[in-house]
Image (cartoon, rainbow, N blue to C red; front, side):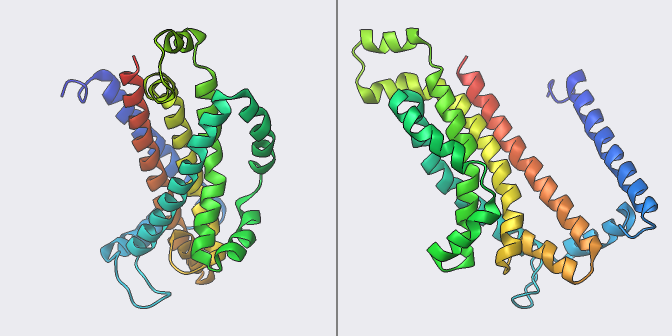
Amino acid sequence: MKKIFSVSGALSIAYFIGSILLLLGLWSLVSAFTGQEIPGPAATWTVFYEMLQDPFYDYGPNDKGIGIQLWSSIKRVFSGFFIGSLVAIPLGLLMGASKTGMRLLNPLVQVLRPVSPLAWFPLGLLAFKASEGATVFIIAITSLWPTLINTAFGVSSIPQDFRNVGKAFGFSTWKYLTKILIPYALPHIITGLRLSIGIAWMVIVAGEMLSGGIGIGFFVWDSWNGLSLEKILSAILIIGIVGLLLDKLFNALQRFVAYEGK
């Protein structure tokens, strides 16, 4: 209770409110400058409120509520993120623990890391024969790199004294992994996961625009085809809010791990 009503807590709330007011002010200026061609906050709120009245309606393949669209996107994001993490963490551990692994895999990472998710999409379609699998594929392949790189850095930065302790006590490989390597590298791994989930959430919009069907990205594209800029802006707000919540979730996990490591 003391933390909630502390000065720092009050300042955080004040800064957050200030940020929202700044956003609304800039948004209103842009709307006025474009002659209301870009809807302002009030017009967007009216449509946004209507969307929230029945977010889970289902009137057919191309007419579903924003709640269904959002949930579909979240499932794809976490599927791709989970698959990417399963690849990234073991490879990062290998690269960080082995100079040979680093020299062998690092050039491959640097070549593949900058590739756009849109470039991966045709390969995903070819491999999985369906847009759903292709979308999950591009999320996995583009979101794994921050986790891989941060994991490798965390493992490679383990102090030599820690390694010597393991050798002095005759730790087995498993005991060294669970008692020294993973605990020390865990904060770096969580940092990588935090960055990766942000990338995964950004990629989903582009992926669903290409794949169609259900999802927040398809909703944006469909709203554009329907000339509803208010719906597009509402979707952008939802995307931003969900991204903020995901970042806060991993930030809390990062703080917990950092605290445990002290």
